[in-house]
Image 1: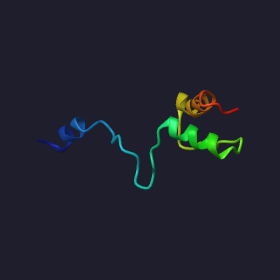
Image 2: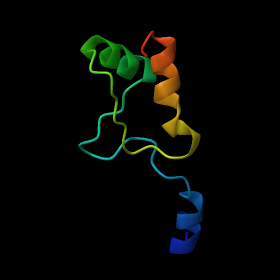
Image 3: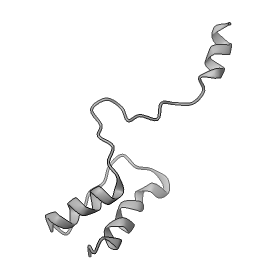
Length: 64
């Protein structure tokens, strides 16, 4: 198999987060944010509509 054919077969990027990055479920992030009671949540490393998802989950968890 040529190198080009191998690259075409492996076109999907890895689904795991990069080394040193911890993936968390939105409900876990919201629960922690509510328990801290700080009133502010900074989120980094998200793009597109995923940027709004933590805020929506936080509101559903009872945050303000």
